Amino acid sequence: MTQAPRAVNIVGAGLAGSLLALLLARRGLRVALFERRADPRQAQPERGRSINLALAARGLRALERAGVLAQVQPLLIPMRGRMVHERAGRAALQPYGQREHEVIYSVGRADLNRVLIDAAARHGAVSVRFGQTCLGADSAASRLRFRGEGGEYSVPLAPTLATDGAGSAVRTSLAAAGLLKVREEWLDHDYKELSISPAAGAALERHALHIWPRGGFMLIALPNTDGSFTATLFLPRSGAPSFATLDGAAAVTAFFGREFPDTLALLPDLAAQFAAHPQGQLGTVHTTPWHRGGEVLLLGDAAHAIVPFHGQGMNAAFEDCTQLDELLGAHGADWAGAFAAFEAARAPNAAAIARMALENYAEMRAAVLDEGFVRRRTLALELERRFPERFIPRYSMVMFHPEIPYTEALRRGAVQEELLRQLDAGPGTQPDGARAAELVASRLAPL
Ligand code: FAD
Image (spheres, helix red, strand yellow):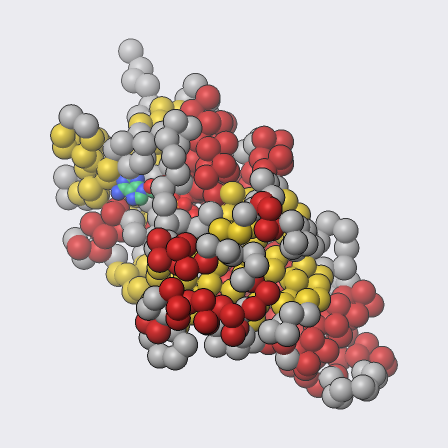
């Protein structure tokens, strides 16, 4: 009698885990998906996590591959650009791209996760087990340990895919056993989410990502399907101004009145929300290696959590799922080979997007108000119009061009930035068209 192949363990039914379960099931594998939380189709979403996220081309491509794009589509709100709000109340839209489809989408985390879990759970090859907290991987004993309602237990380790997020228990256990190294780089800026009701949100353009950039800090807001917006304040933890100085209702109201005066009407219960909502930390997780033989592989935030300023953490995690799925197709039952190929392909890309995400914070909170930045951004879009096969702005490469790896976006982006600075002759001047053509042709190979 032949034995049924062992199920693949996936730890964490968050965004990556639930999508990956579906992809692997479609590939003909049996999947055991373990999740610490209760079933989100029956329970309220966890507090304190970002409520909505920006979904872009890399994420969309993965959803399409898993056959769930049609179910996700009704949850998506297109955002055509950044609506930049100045202190004096003036607001102007900076489009993300110049083609109709060059938009990003706001999507509710809980709704998206529910759709993915539901699609995975409906697949006969996936068994989803909620209320199961992974305690770690025991590589020496080849077991994966859990605590559930009935107490502690373990299952065979190989093969395990760890998608248990930025605080991954699997990663922590492997690091404690000396099997991998982890470096967590915390940002000295924290975040807090505030909710703008549908009634108040009616005053805001729905198809935009709103930013109130203030140099050292910023407020942003993304639309939700019910007409509400989720605003997020990013601010240093200490110093002035900082979360430490916003130590009561009067300080909070005075700060918003001074820095974001037009938001006071959007947030009539600002002080109460500010007191009630958690203050979240942000950071980058660097892990090496990501896998141990063919036993266990970390992916998504568990391997490479990043700061949220490029709106790419989930997109990168979804791209991980796409790439692993492709590699499993090529490597068959050779898990060790697939895991090694995955890490070799993805780790440089994860490092590139981690860096671009940090750089984008400076761009969002400060540069979008800078005349030189706006001039060079206009010039970049003009160069893209003239030389679409060679020049694509870095933001567009990351958000709209999944065929361009993050490493290449980073590399070409640096060349392009230098070229833009060479061509930008200052306020009120027009760049030399012939020189632009010459520089683009000599510095940028066709894509
Ligand atoms: P998660 O979504 O965190 O899922 C991990 C899952 O594992 C959860 O379900 C959790 O309950 C479960 N789990 C954890 N520990 C255990 C355990 N011990 N046992 C069992 N289960 C466990 N990304 C974007 O692409 N666009 C954005 O606009 C964006 N905005 C963001 C804004 C903020 C403020 C933050 C903090 C992040 C943002 N991100 C964004 C990043 C995005 O949230 C993450 O990259 C994404 O959630 C990663 O998916 P994941 O599946 O790897 O991890």
